[in-house]
Image (cartoon, rainbow over all chains, first blue to last red; front, side):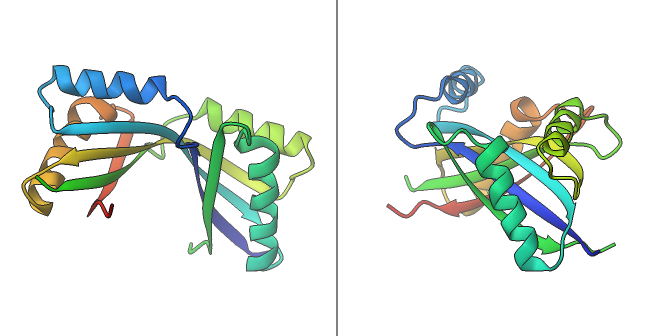
Length: 86
Length: 86
C-alpha cells in the first residue's frame, strides 16, 4: 500500500488563554525582542501512514485528529496529506 | 510599523529519539489505527511582530529561533513570514 505523509497543526482556539505563548513572549521581551506583539504556541506532528489512496489517508488523519491529537474543547486542527516521496 | 505573522515549525532532528511521537503511535495502534507507521512530534508557533519590512521580520525571527525557540543540539526549525492582513 502507498505511504502518505500527514502534517498536522494543532493550535489553541483564539479565545483560549495561552500561558506557554505568554511566557515565550515575556522571555523574548527580556532578550530585547520588544517588537514581538504576541506568541501562540501549538503542536506540529508528522505522521506516516499506509492508505488506499489520498482520500483514505485524509479520512484516517481526520479521525486521528478528532480522537487523539486535538482536544476539541480548546483546540483546533488542520492538516495536509501528500504521498510520500522516497 | 507594519506587523508580520511568522509561522515557526520546530522539529527534532531525524536521528533524535522521539518518545512523545512513539507514545502517540502506540496509542493510535491501540485505537485501531494500525496503518500509522511513524509519528514525530514537534512545536508550532505563531508570532506577530512589528518590523521594518519583510527582510527585517525574517532576520528577527531567525534570531528568535536560534536564541530561544529551538535547541540546536537536537532540533531544527523552519519558518514562513508574511505581512499580517487585518
